[in-house]
Length: 196
Image 1 (cartoon, helix red, strand yellow):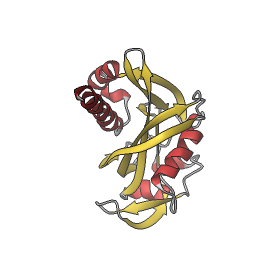
Image 2 (spheres, rainbow, N blue to C red; image 1 turned 90 degrees about the vertical axis):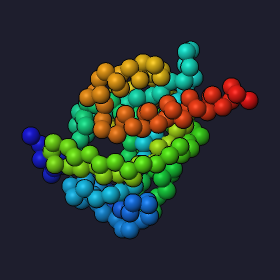
Image 3 (cartoon, helix red, strand yellow; image 1 turned 120 degrees about the vertical axis):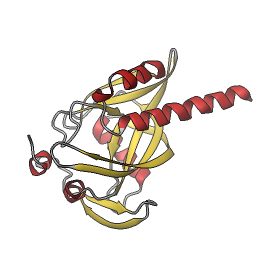
Image 4 (spheres, rainbow, N blue to C red; image 1 turned 45 degrees about the vertical axis):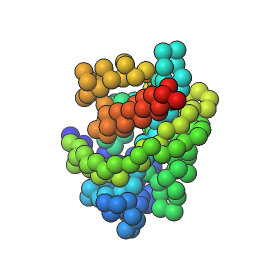
């Protein structure tokens, strides 16, 4: 089994300074990405979900994490997941990371909600994140960076709900929470539009 030092050895961002926060998402300091994940420190993060109109309703872009990722390699997640660097806003970081991970641009990103979660992985690393959930559109065709994402696909709500229920182990720890929140928000927004 890979230990935490080996797991992050090839991560080019391992020395990025991440934003440490308290339970109210107030910045309380900074630490390297490696220290943050090896010590399980609460830090600011974001999860982007790109949405498009499909033939049968809204579709979400899922991304399969590259096998070489320091945790959750080979698992499906939302379109893009990462951390703002010290001195960078969450939205700025989200636009930057969509381009770096997916090779396309995000448009009209807006924050839906935020929540905290903690997940410990077999290699000893820990994600303890105050995760901001952002939704937007995809501009251009995705051309994922192979060190980040092995493939992407668009999926409708019914298919995704079925996958989350029947194959939860195919998803990264945070993905079911993020994707369910986004589907619920979009569905409630559509219902409000229909009621007008």
